[in-house]
Image 1: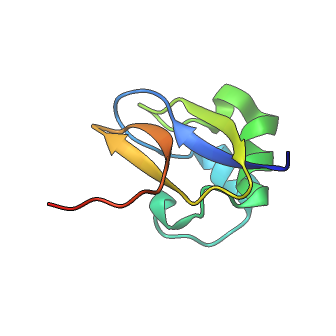
Image 2 (image 1 turned 90 degrees about the horizontal axis):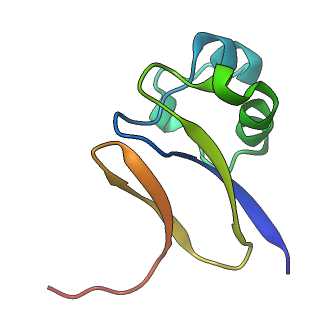
Length: 90
């Protein structure tokens, strides 16, 4: 099964990249949330830097999901997980 790698934050506080990670990423994003979480360069930076990629109050992790899944990142007070997209009615 083919997989895709996605970067999430696993602690309360929210996704954020350290200055070192932003420099290594080499992109001119004004805000961290503008970066696609499955961007191969982002994944590479987080895997390479480990804990040094984390901004204060962040603990970044690379997770693998099946490539054919339609996904989104669910966030509760900054703590995230990847969920499969499904339909909802209210």
